[in-house]
Image 1 (spheres, rainbow, N blue to C red):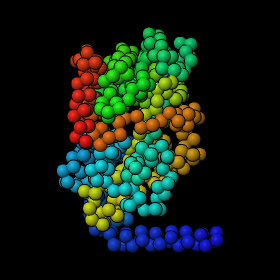
Image 2: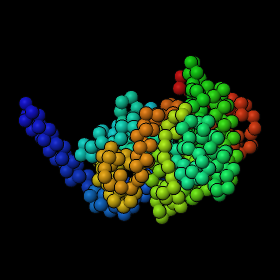
Image 3: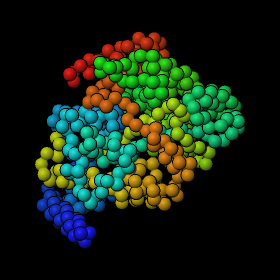
Image 4: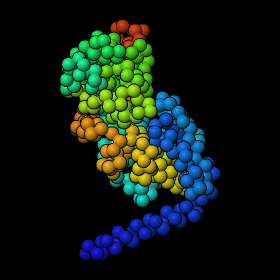
Length: 426
């Protein structure tokens, strides 16, 4: 019985390999240009000197349009929603997946990525974020949850233990900011956007007991929890670098690894950035831990999906699907590790590899494992989330920058617009 099962599996693998070879023979040269939307993550930029391999395989030219986070979201949405179809591969994240799936803009991953790329090897936490109703739609090459990063030397100088509760963290931030250490106590995202200030504000909102919707499925983020979270987030900005009201994630990360900040809660992917001796001034001075209780961890994932609009014919689907599999493969991640890039890890096999452990501190790996149970998709899982989140993000930026000082009224206004968006789904 076992022998028959083994032979059947071997036969199926052989058939899959034959089918893939036939696809390559049939479609080679049939897709002169493969247009891809990208964002400047290491997993994307690391492809620059390897694209010729893929181009030679399919006799095509991959063109990756590199955009910032907000710009690529807008570009991809516009291309799919208008039916333009200029891009065959779209850069997707957890914030816009529900919209893309409900609109029918992307293919299920297992329909277009060859089995040889082992979709089952993607990290479970990332695959879950890339899945709707049990179907995975994009191949995640980066993602995870949150970690608290802190300056071990500054905490030691101040006689402070790494905070394990939110109250302890707030007290530590204030003490460290007042100390004569050349660093601000804290930093975060202030810039408008569902994936910017809203993303970092949301754990505070959820820690205060906040829920996005009430029992009638109407907006509830303007309640007591939303006001309390906003007031605390705004208060902490007094202990941050100048300009934080419009900081994006890059501004915060660079401020921390530039030695300007003592405590930072950010996506775990940025941990290895602190250990880069060429770009970080604080190598060997950073500790890692889960977010202090009761702060949850914001689960997220970025990756590539194949556009139904841009890849409507068979060969475009085949070539685009193979690109997604190739660019997010185990082999590609291992090659990045060999090049010293440890920040974009989408594969379980990579996370568990000796080469990964050689590049990051053990307490970083421990923090990833400890944070796992606290990690979830904290944003509203709705097709209209992008517009709701972006409107809320604008409101929060106005509060953070001092343009508006009535927190309750500002959140009420954002909730009013959110209600209008949700009503369109009914």
